[in-house]
Amino acid sequence: MHGLSRLGSGSNRSVSPSPLSSPRFRHGRYKSFSGGGGRDGKQWAADKIVFVLISTVFRRKGVLLFAPLLYIAGMLLYMGLLGFDVLSLKNAVVVVQRRSPPGSVYRSPQVFQKLWPFMEAESNASHNALMTAWNLKMQHGWKPSINSIISKTELPKSNGFLIIEANGGLNQQRLSICDAVAVAWLLNATLVIPFFHLNSVWRDSSKFGDIFDEEYFIHALRNHVNVVRELPEDVLQRFDNNISNIVNLRVKGWSSAAHYLQKVLPKLQAMGAVRIAPFSNRLAYSVPSNVQGIRCLSNFQALRFAEPIRTLADKMVERMVKNSSHTGGKYVSVHLRFEMDMVAFSCCEYDGGEEEKHEMDIARERSWRGKFRRRGRVIRPGANRMDGKCPLTPLEVGLMLRGMGFDNNTPVFVAAGNIYKAEKYMAPLKQMFPLLETKDTLATPEELAPFKGHSSRLAALDYTVCLHSEVFVTTQGGNFPHFLIGHRRYLFGGHAKTIKPDKRKLALLFDSPHIRWGTFKRQMKDMLRHSDVKGSELKKPDASVYTFPMPDCMCKQTEAANGSRSSFE
Image 1: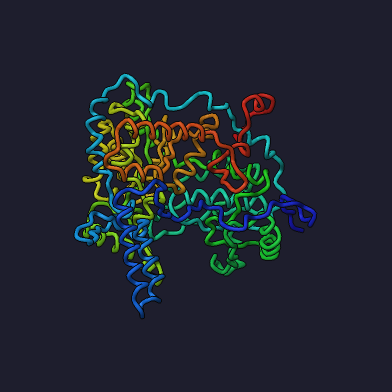
Image 2: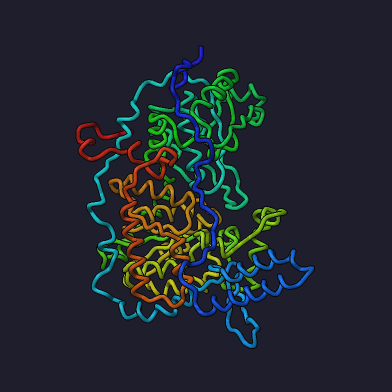
């Protein structure tokens, strides 16, 4: 007799369907456009030339069929869609010059040179945006409420063992672990501590217990999901002591709770153990509220870093707070994604010329063999930049923060991997923010030695220092900021205290080397206000509960006062 699933076995049970497609953010392709103003002298001259050419064509026999093509070409030239500027008319000859498409040239250094004197003039200002970045009225006093969503009950008899393989970096692994806990609860399965796949990009051989506190994880989930470190000997013997003999179920991405109950549960009950590998993004965002509650429990309560990571990370936070004593212990943290692999994957171009292009080609081929050389694939760096898909450089992050009102006395922590050409690209950021720290400056070489060569453990240190900052700045998306934003909402009363820049707007501003400081500051402060407003955003049906914990994992403070506080001790 097998135990029942958590949602019951009857067909009349309603389960939220899976989204029709992956709920990842989609961005429209960049489209160039021309302004709608009146014609200037150059445009009028070009129109005149087009008219004369077409008139000549119509007077000559044999070329009449080419008239439509000539007309279209002339109009494209006139409208500017061919990327040419009409410079002058001399002896009825049109002089044209090819115009660089918007975003095709990395002009941020020119903007910096233009605005730097104004930033220097405002150094050591009496007002620092760090002290007033967030409007208290935007913080609505949300409190954790997992206890009201899932109740502590005696665990029913297990239907079998669930084995999953987590891949990717630290927070991709975190996603897989939390979703695996939710699926194990749904199927009433016993979860085996997840295996970590050695990723070709991250290249970290760490196991679960090297990154997370295994004992605490098992203990925190004990009233909801049974977790074991490894398969029992008698079960493993049934599969000839080879875990690869256990059937591997190919579950589609973003599968619904109903799919697991209808397709996976029968196989689990029949075989006693199943594998799902890989398991990344294998559970839909939209699931019943009690399943969301298990996700919240595993992410915000059960998963904590291993003791060596926690010990060093806490020291780094203490040192950062001490270095920020002149700002009341408040500091800004920035997740900077300007590693070589990230720059290569974005297919964006900066100011490194042919050397940069050569290095990026090598990096793309090393990590994504052939992906960027497939037939029909066209890479448009300028369009990528104007569509907000290029990683912000350290210089651009610094410009943005100074424009928002963070002065040169602002303590800044930069969370990053190995920055591409760090000496060159980090110099202007350090010039704008002299009180800049990284994990390499906050911790001694001896303290960091056990973590070297383990990117996920190093990322865990960055994650912790960013988690406790007054302001967090995300620059490129990905699982690190998505999880961190949700964790900050969970800790800080529902407000993320996060700057999420509008990279399309930034691309336009950084493409304007003659922009005025006053104009730039107004745009940046509007962007900061927008981040403040979006800080307490509620979860939408197709969004992740790990990023938007309200209202699935939290409730308003007035509501929380009427209920019991969550506790999983």
